[in-house]
Image (cartoon, rainbow, N blue to C red; front, side, top):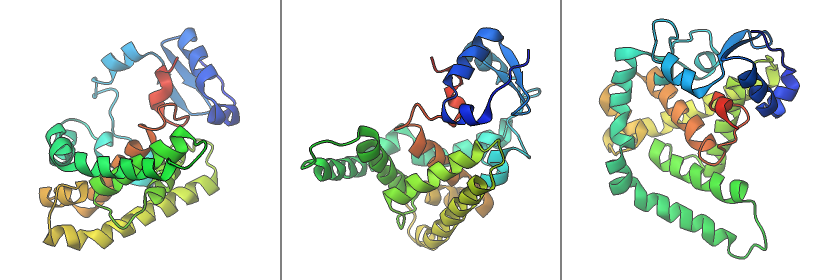
Length: 243
């Protein structure tokens, strides 16, 4: 089945079109995206495991071209190897033993900054800076600010959803990825000499080449900053099954 979208309308609010696609068929072809979309979660759950047909590798996909080929764009042993290498930084035990106290301090600092405000936006003024501060710690890019984390994350998410080919969106994404690479370079020697449990340090210790480290840190930033405070993220395919 074919379904036509208005790219501008879809960019601002995809939910009506996504609901219409789900009602139309389990698979629809959207010519404006030049893609066939599986519209229902149950089908995605089954079909995504058939990597011989639905491979995660997308050499010409926007994410790969703009952010590098991270573990999300690999299948089988290649994916498992990088996932295993990053796990020590993100495991539940590490979160409890290493990151929890730092997360709590960052959260309290944001709360303290809101104490005297008559009103504030829960996402913009609380969730975003808390997520940004958590990512500064967990990625190991400690020269970045929470606000910078939000900015580069949003620029990458916008770039990966830039199906219209807007050159200004692509430029902003390139600026963001270059900024992340620069901060990785700033901290790489530090975590090599003084290793810790940050993503940067753990991937360095795991022997990942620099290009993989850069790509996987960008993956952590893009998902870590956008999805927790913005589960309604209008740009991500994770919204396909939203009601």
